[in-house]
Image (cartoon, rainbow, N blue to C red):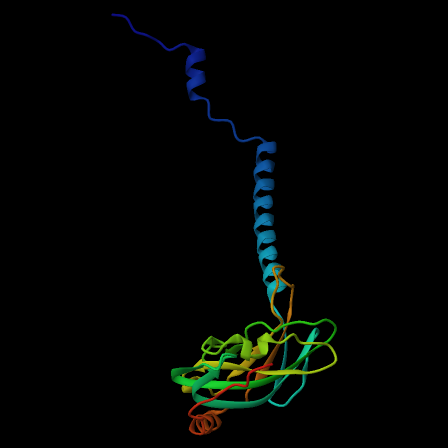
Length: 218
């Protein structure tokens, strides 16, 4: 009967424990972890800086106030309500727009600090967090956004919003220069509180005109 005995060298080889990672490998792993953490922090900081970069600078005021921002100034003169809009073009043809809510007509004035500019689409903010852009049920040529706002004198016009009456309390109008292809970092905007509490909003709606006809700018 024969037996097979494992050689000494073969037995030693199979029983040898795996070598622990070297000091350099451990240091490399630590450095890699630090680098990944730093990259994550850097991306987070970059994202925060980008968000701050895009946030507009806001100047605030109320109805009747002349609010002066960096590139332009604006004021709200009056706030009115209407159940329908009727406009007449140069041809004399009348068009009428209606709403399930209420039309809010805001008379706005604006002037530029240095260079001529146009206002972008005005926005109405509500306490509920909703944003209402100026309605397209009235031709833009009849509104403040059609004007070129010049330095040294005030241009005036209206902006019109279509919204539910219940959204009126606490509402504010936001005006800003029209944006170009290039995004302006921290561009200026003016936010004007319309001064409408619950009672004021109900009073405004109760006195709404049946039809509002904007003036044609010549």
